[in-house]
Image (cartoon, rainbow, N blue to C red):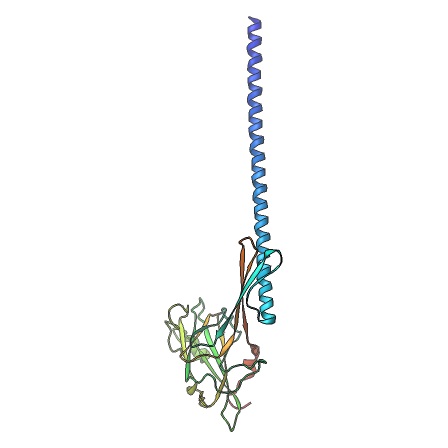
Length: 286
């Protein structure tokens, strides 16, 4: 009887050891597989980051080459990386022109109304000769107003440089306009049309300034716009072609393994700083 009890106890303990051993092996296998999977994932992420970095560097190289020498098209770099650069005019057409980015309140954007010479100087001859243009801007949580400055050169024989100013506030109840003396806007809905993401529209009629500006004989040099009270997306709509405003450069870099990255740069003509509009205040000759 004792021998039978001893034999049963021995087999029972052996069975427990086997179960514990299997459990330990299962846990160990799970941990090892988890570590292998994590390592594989980490390696994959590292490869993706490296390929993305190569593609981005190639795109940057394309931008630098285009800014330096006007390069366009596909060029292959070392290690099978490459870039494809395209250049497109900004402006130089009638219709809708949108400033490349939302304009920060208190800063000024320039819309050129004359052509530029090859050396960057202004070709001071009447170029944009339409009697008016529409200036539109977005609705924001704080309603933006807009200050406008028109710089122009009178027709011969005076040939004087002059400036005209206007200020427009779409404030719905008029309380703000009573304090700032801005004019109301042409339209407080609709902006420059569907797809422009604008709400307010002001028609800038050059003949309404005093002295009267005649775009067919006077030379319109530039239109300067500055949001007040809030940042704003700004759009201009014209029936006549605008002069060239600059160049949009798009560079797509490829790592050679299917990963690509794109960089877009807007190369606009140089314009005076925002303080220029605060210094120039008279519509008379200067």
